[in-house]
Length: 59
Image (cartoon, rainbow, N blue to C red; front, top):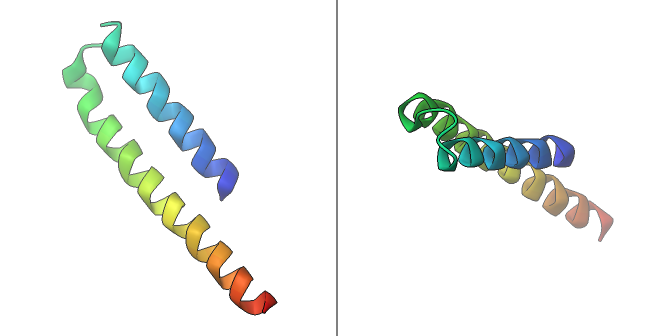
């Protein structure tokens, strides 16, 4: 999940770069950028909770 989270953040970076450079119109990137933010939030939560659960079991 950590790798998936990193990849999602990198994808978000490239989407922002496309928007900033006007290679793709911002209107076409809005939905996919929003979706990438949602995926990052989900993956971040999974990674954090997995670490918390692992730490609790280790004690």
